[in-house]
Image (tube, rainbow, N blue to C red; front, side, top):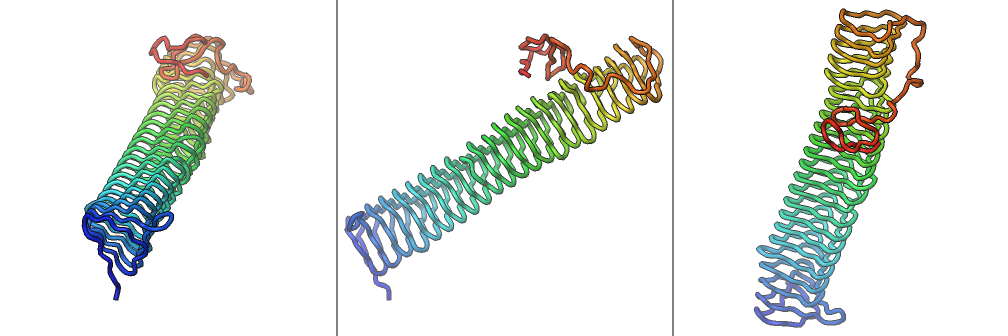
Length: 445
């Protein structure tokens, strides 16, 4: 039969080793013996509330009602359970299972299999656990290794992480590392390189440095201050990558800005504007607004509802420009369609169609169709068939040739001393800082 040692309420007692269980009355204080002072209990410690240990504590189990404070290390073989109170450990803490109703604070390292806190969990050291569940917040200064973290409020981890699944109702911030699956209701931020398999965030995501991952699904905006390797990106608002981006698919409801190059093996679908400082390549490129890049290449089609501004031009199997769109730079494709009242510079294609009211500098193709009220400022060369409707304005007589010249590589790629607004496509002086039409600041090439 297990023996029991009892400590009266509001007393202060010094203990060494307790054979069996230890029952501590309310507001009692326990001191240990030795260096450092330590109390060892072979059974379970029962705390009736507002108890303080001025020593290291080890036991088989710890059960408490109300608050418990330990000024030392806590080593529990099995379970810790605190009802209607908080647990403070000013040292290291180890246990198998921890269940605290209010709050848990550990000043050094926490090592557990499972921890369940109704309110807040704060650890100033490292954390190693299989399962972390907090109803309020979770804060850690050191590194965190866990299979699953489920927090109703917010998570803040200052150091590197290794987490299989991170599920947070509010906001989460980590110091880089690896998170296989991120599911956040609000905002998510990583302050150092992050490796991930899936990010699902309802609000805003911010990543730093060089990142590598799988799928990204964000309801708001997604910003990477560095490079990103990914599989698929689906963002409702804005995507901003200050370095280079490489992946499969990208579907964005708002706009995309990339500081260097963007290389996709699949499709790019953007509802608003795309701005890529260097080259953009994809299987298909579909942009509702403006496409601005040094060079744009697609295996299949490039379809832009607004304007294209590209110093070295666009190349694809099919290029289609929407009504009243503007193209700065050469177009090279098997099939080229210039929408009604749209403006283009040099066009090179096997099948070229200029819809009613369109304008172009020069047109070179195999079979060319020019609808009424179109205007060609330069020359028209074709090797197959030319079809023109009435009221077409030509600067020169069209020429049927064996091979049209010049080739796209010989054609001028941009007018000298001019640059174009990436927002409205208006031509500005080379030294212009703001667009003369829309007033927006023009980024440096």
